[in-house]
Length: 93
Image (cartoon, rainbow, N blue to C red; front, side, top):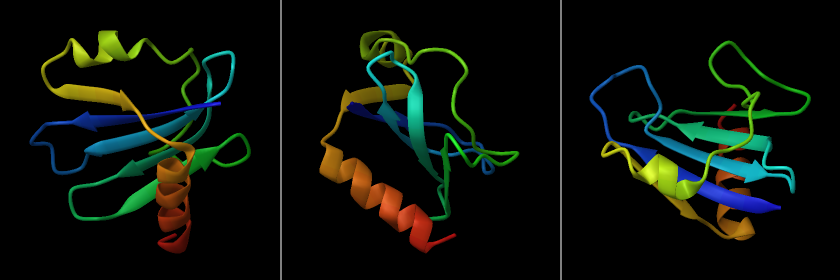
């Protein structure tokens, strides 16, 4: 498993500003958490998705590709950082 964090710098009130993803060996998301500017969070996994959060249907792109876009910053995070965000999102749902 790999864990990544993507920050999206934008002014859209209804879109997430932070995404954390757990990626399988094949590069596909297995779990995802997204946080909004107002502190709300949502999550998805292989058994649960909503109209506003779901797992990607394509493999996760290279971090360099994501970060090459000025509004995005992508980096690898620890499993512990992901689990903390995952638990926070579950507690808020």
